[in-house]
Image (tube, rainbow, N blue to C red):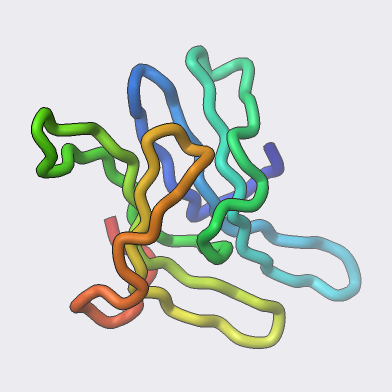
Length: 122
């Protein structure tokens, strides 16, 4: 995966996950772009892409956690919350919540949580 900062990182089902983040593009037109790819590894050495284009907007500085849902029996999910999306001309602070059981398929829990858009929260 490409070098990045402000990405989500978590351990889910004995696998490490890198989710989204921010990439600094060098050159005459220095830019920052947000990413929405998802990568996984069981050993930290060999990484596989789970998806390069999930349903959610690219973002950095988002929360990433693992939690059980309320089903019976409970199921474990990865969740991402909020963050900041940069589209090249503007930044958008997000307050959406998404979850996944496999890192490939993501389901939106809410487009607008009960809190203001934010980034750099953990």
